[in-house]
Length: 485
Ligand code: C2O
Ligand code: CU
Ligand code: CU
Image (cartoon, rainbow, N blue to C red; front, side, top):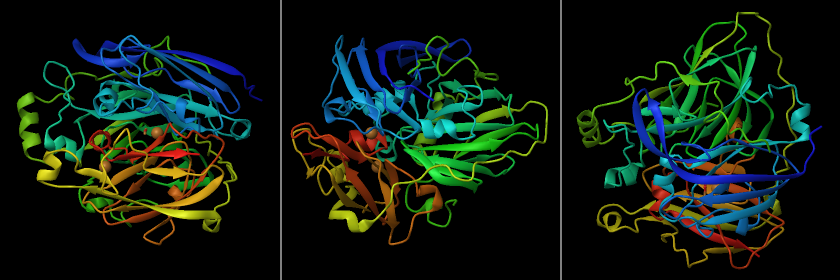
């Protein structure tokens, strides 16, 4: 039985220097450390106070992605923290057990700030999840994995480019950082591992799977457990999306978790049918010292020239394959693992509850319009801090119909709520998407209908955001604001 209570976290945003490669220094941003921040462990029912201070030379924010909370605590662009400034967010944890993340949401600066490291993981536990027979020992058999591709210049600094190509495709890199580590190796001491995957990349979509093709169970989506474990051999995550999986390593054989970068321009290989079914840990570096880049040499680094040529080539990066985690299990014990039959009771889903439908059309104006800015739009409008786009009533259910009129897939994210996917082009979502979601990929030409319920918190002035979670698209204006009144 977990006790809820008041949790106070002191988070300090700062510049740092990271050594992703031996003997090479990379200027980064971190929270209480040099890159990324501590994992915040919360229990449902906790009251949380986040004291955020900033030593950054530019305005930043810290947004609690996936949380249901008052707009003033959301950490979006309306809660800026200036250089030397501070901000306190208070909220109650009204989430189901899952993992969430926190990251910069600074106006037009989310992309570069997250890229440099302004992000971290949040675990939420509740009594129901504690009662399940699942790996639950943080860093031992319950492993957070923040997956981020990065590009490095030959001097070791990150390459973050706002050239048109990088804004259009989003910023991608050729080197995988997992919890801020290059080529991590994990020595397993148990028969099964729970992996909590966060796609914390700015723009890249991945299909995760194991190098030997072994099947595993997906147990959770963005905001909670699935109703029952889902056997599968792959999980697709766009930026902002999360998944929890259980993998059996009882055969004792080394295995690697791989991530295939997916093409997001046009339907590519993303088309339907191609898709598969409050403690702080700050003392021991990003996400604990159980990980280290063993080979972490320069192999991951590409020469600047080679990179430049690649960039010129246009689509260079999209379909790259990465190793996320090399797992070295303990000796084989061949004790077959048993999964719980049921995981959670999901809220009922009845489109008849909706009082109205709102349409959101995602688009990218091409050519001159995009070059002048203002090409990334929702319902023809580019983000305007002064404009409230939608006003919803508290204690109502709505359908949000999201349409993609552009040639690229966009992960559509909505603050404050965990929603359900009703259908894609009229068809029921895959089993992997039938849980609680706060981010949903909308493929080119697709219409996705979401069912959302707005509860508890109202604020006539301060809005929440909805936006594309390709951070360069968000920064370029593919974002809107809604209030709950
Ligand atoms: Cu993960 Cu509005 O953001
Ligand atoms: Cu969010
Ligand atoms: Cu987008």
